Length: 171
Image (cartoon, rainbow, N blue to C red; front, side, top):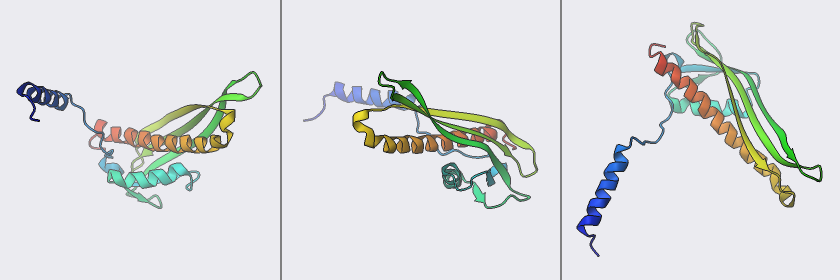
């Protein structure tokens, strides 16, 4: 059944409206030229954050190196903590709601030692309700939320590093 002329015009107008709204998918972060060779300085190099950053940075065009050097920028992660807090307690003195918080402090230095990004603090959190009838699923829910926070933290760090390049194109 062919579309009527009015329906075709309405579809074309809707497509033009959506195309003109400026919406586009977020691209990978692009780091400044001074951060194309990068060393991740972190107390626990085996942490999930260090692993995820090492995997995500090459997608930005950067090369992660194993040791600092004369032509290597440094991403220094000073704090990396994940904590679980009780938000509310029910009438039976059992926790009903929890919050998982991921706290990271970091800075970035160029190969010549100048500060590209002063100390930044990012804290992300997720809340969830404890259901005593689903007690076995709580640990897997905590693990899932923690991994989700980890992915979001990596993206937040990359976006902050990308801003260095946008603010200082010569950096």
